[in-house]
Image 1 (cartoon, rainbow, N blue to C red):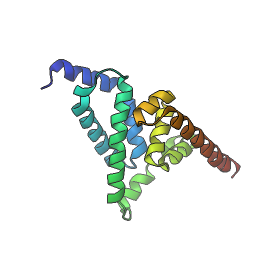
Image 2 (cartoon, rainbow, N blue to C red):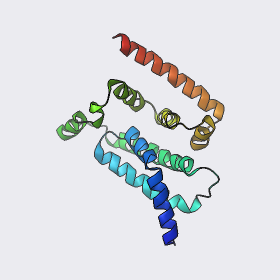
Image 3 (cartoon, rainbow, N blue to C red):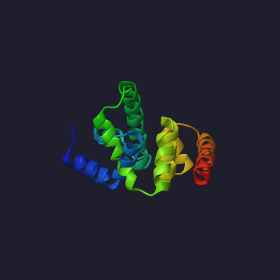
Length: 168
């Protein structure tokens, strides 16, 4: 049973770290409905797990770990469910994408991230959020050396892709 103090602490921490929720949802969802569904799933899982948060790591690290696990599961489930032709409504939603009003560089970055597999997508999100290699390793359950290697490869791939776009 939860106490009002626990509920208040959870709400306060969620408010403080809500950008993590937005980043994860924006990276793993194409449309607003999926975004909202994923956000709800993440919040429910965070609340269910909140009793086990013991403070040995930062709340943001713990939150990322849960949010990314939920997002990867959601992404897998949704990608197998939606392997059909998009309806006219879904095409319209994609055409009115929020990223269209952003600078071209940001649009390219979002396109690059969207094309990555779930693990590399998580790596980029954590890296861009300023987490250390150690923190990224803790969240993803891989070695710090593996994080460094993967990020180096992703940077190289991004340079090659963006260099090709810049010349075109």
